[in-house]
Image 1 (cartoon, rainbow, N blue to C red):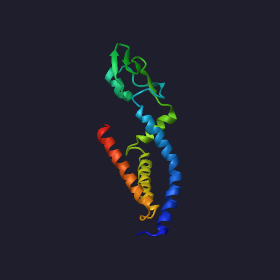
Image 2: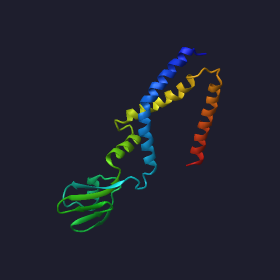
Image 3: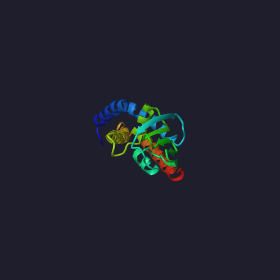
Image 4: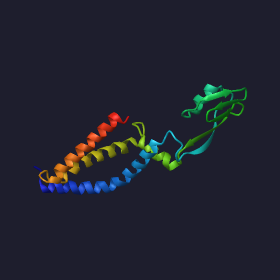
Length: 172
């Protein structure tokens, strides 16, 4: 059995790391809620961008050069290409694209939540995950195993894990 000193040490680290991670968790919570509504236009605003690319491109070449996610050509004439998000003037090489997107700070929050191993934010996500695992372990080391709160905590954690598994199996 671990000593009382070990349990008090874990309580101290759990407390200080918890205060630090409270800010990170708030950002993750808001960005996670935003991701639920990403197929909708909730909190999104029209943003227009003008691009200068080569002139006299056909529709597919213009789409390839613009590299805008979800951009498709709807029609093409001698002087212009119409896209689902805007148009391209073949004579000048100017493309005007209008899409709905989050304001800058919200877009950055969503990007944080969706970071992959190709992003520098990847390390923040890994560190955050490890810190959350520390919380899981330290939550049980904050109390002596012989106390009723420890045993009740194990039961409640088991119910939480079971609830999550059931939601994953039947909720999606």
